[in-house]
Amino acid sequence: MSKVIITCAVTGSIHTPTMSPHLPITPDEIAASAIGAANAGAAILHLHARDPNNGSPTPDPDIFRQFLPQIRDACDAVINITTGGAATMSIEERIAGPLALQPEMCSLNMGSMNFGLYPALEKFPDWKHDWEPDYLSGSRNQIFRNTFTDIETILERLGKGCGTRFEFECYDVGHLYNLAHFVDRGLTKPPFFVQTIFGILGGIGPDPENLLHMRRIADKLFGSDYQWSILAAGRHQTRFVTTGAMLGGHVRIGLEDNLYLSKGVLAESNATQVRKISHILDELSLEIATPAEARTMLALKGPDDVRF
Image (cartoon, rainbow, N blue to C red; front, side, top):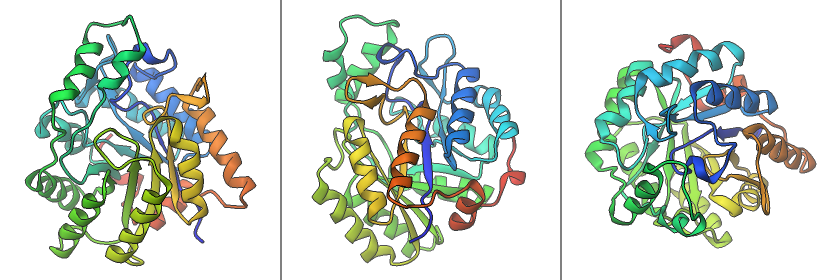
């Protein structure tokens, strides 16, 4: 069994400022939270940007530039920038930052889907910002677009063009087959970092049999050519990533995926979640990968070949 890569998804575009006072919003907050997660043991930092004035998701490369150099200078973690952004953004907006900054890694969603955030509307009677309820409500009638052309564009322009490799985000079984389609066409090469995602409304549900099924299908499609990672939304996070690690997978945690440390207890930082899963992995006698080891496992180009 190889060492376990911990990915920390620092802020994302799912949760809004009202939901937790600990959600990093400003560039300085995102940088500090990411560095804390790296110091706690995260080898990969998955990063979105937010408007520092109101916390809304933004694709602005200039906002990314305000925190990426801080992170790079303070730790050696792999920096992984989203190409998903938010469902409200066009594909050109979503890839503007990655194309300008050319990181070692980016996320890449492997199919269009419903992405329901609107159930959160029932949990909060008041909102800090007017955009929050409109943003959540809008997910009822939006498609999170990731067409075959969109994926081809990202693989060509960012992968082939910039040497960036990908965290292939697979929210359902069909997404694994989509990835296999692009592999068969020669548009991406192994090793593949396959992130299987559970518990998002519109994707595969957080049932243990689904975890095993996704693993079986990935094994069938990619054999020994991939590294398997697991994330689960909200309260399902700890049990799913723990089970996945026991089955030989890597893990992703962080405030993008789950705002809580335990039942009813908000996580005060990303580092607290990293420390929690690190302790669990240690108790399971599983070794945690360093950033250098993660780079080797995933065949990354290295931190000297980025543009930030």
